[in-house]
Image (cartoon, rainbow, N blue to C red):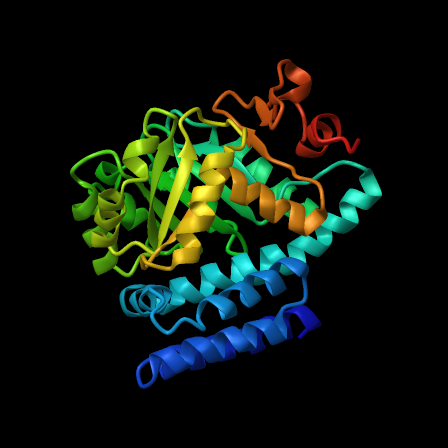
Length: 338
């Protein structure tokens, strides 16, 4: 057993104990788990994350206690453990170290997460597989997959090939009320984000919760929708579906332009700890994590045609298309360190 495998096994043992202890003294168990997280944290990101949680949970009235209790009560422990370990240990510890080493070696930035499309109208499966396989080789283990067209068992089989990754799948409630959960049943390393775009949201959330899936809610953000999203009543509606995560995505897909007002509002809501879910500003928070991991911000996405997008926009031409070039060849052109 190598050192990384041993470390993962030890951490998983603590997690399993945490699940058992939650049945008798949940609040104390949560605080103890945060303390353990701080002791095991090696990288800057993990230390800052757990220290922030520790400070927040000094507030005994924090709604985040309810967040954790709901997670443990309604979500399969296998799914929680697998996704959490893949995100926190595989991606943000081992992967982050590999990213830093490769960035220094090759002099271009490597994102800690990629944003892709998946489905009958998305990027064809072989190219999704190519990005994930080559991305892991460079240190990236987190992949956001926007459902585009019908998602079939053929598409979810791609995820099954990579049990060490953390996948975030963005889908509509209607897709969850079809056959999609059956295809995802044996993929414990996947977080499902439901789009808050129809009156089917509550029904879809109930279906996922009954089956023990890890899920959250996402909405697109723009200047026109700002007033609605920031309304207290709207946030209380999100509470009703018992989702632990509420993600705000840009209205324009593959846009990486940060919104200062949204970033400040997100930080304020998290700091108030009034709602049993984490508000996550996709653009700002993903790039903040990237800066913590490797100093420079780096955001990369691929559309259904295979074209690459970064924070400077869309890159035109076959030299920047995953259908024509390897991931390495594209990154060394579009994320070159200045």
